[in-house]
Each structure stands twice: as C-alpha cells, then as structure tokens.
Amino acid sequence: MRGRWGVRLFGIALILLIVAAGFGQAVLQLWNWLMPPLFGLHSITYWQALGLLALSWILFGGLRGWPRGGHWRHRRSRWEQMTPEEREKFRQGMRGRCGHFGPPTVEPEV
Figure 1: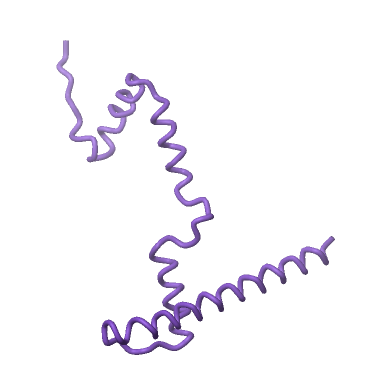
Figure 2 (figure 1 turned 30 degrees about the vertical axis):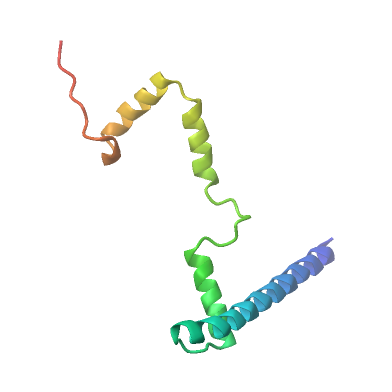
C-alpha cells in the first residue's frame, strides 16, 4: 500500500514539474516575443520567466480550482436565507463592532 502512495506522489510531482516547465517556457517565449518590440523592455531568461509566473500566481489568485472564497460564499448564502427581521437584528449587533454599518444608534429611554 505504501509503495503505491510513493509512486503516486512521484507521478504527481513529475506532472507538476512538467507543467511548471511548460508554463515557464510559454511565459519566456511570449515575453521575449511581445515585450521588447512593443515596450522596449529587455528579454528575460527562463528562470526570470518562472519567477514572473510565480509572482503573477501569487498576486492574481493562483489556481482557480482551489476552494478560494468558499467561506464567504457560504456566508452570503446564509445572508440570503435570512428574513428581513433577522438581517436587521444582525445589523444591530454589528453596529458597535464595524464602521461599515454606521455609528451605533442610541435608542431613547422610555
């Protein structure tokens, strides 16, 4: 059983390495084909292309298949399922904690 996991892990690592190498080469070719003639920038090396790919992955959101934003999607669906009275009760509770909902309201004493 452990041997299978080792082979599977090696296979996944190999596939990821091939994909990274392919995307790095694609970024290198596209950059060197477009950027120097269009904007007068210097050509880049393969390692700079991989760095640029990693930087863009970090800055612009990574892989779309990963469960990014699932937590907030769940919260939004809970909000949509609330009745107007439950929403107002939630807003009242949040008024003292967050500036987004405005200053806390003071109710007159009866």
